[in-house]
Length: 196
Image (spheres, rainbow, N blue to C red):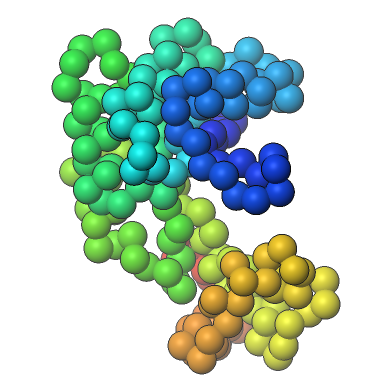
């Protein structure tokens, strides 16, 4: 399954979000060109943006599916209520492309999705695609004794992203995963992915 997302870019060096119909369709076409394809299996809207009307964002999904650019569409990083609103909107009128999935950060280190997003997905029949199921790399066990020089936590670009999970609480979880891995004769990575 080939999937791509639109709505977040770093073209000018900083994170920019734009989920307007024009921006989303242009990003999809750019992805297709870069991939040298005429369609993808799953196209996802990367984030919710309060300033853009939801109907406009979702109209890009309808366009992508109706023109054959995407077989299915999904959302990413939406809260439970946002997921429910988007999925319900798409089901409200025949001919709209129904949402197939939601992508959300989910791992043994971040189980926030269990409160609202996963129940909403279950109620709405959406597939759940966990992003960062290895807890931003922490659950591999590579940070147990420090920060490797070649790791994302050591890079200026990703140090904050990974560093938020380098806490005493997560260290205890990683140690439990490592003990389970030893007992199973698996790697910590395999235990973390099996849990997800």
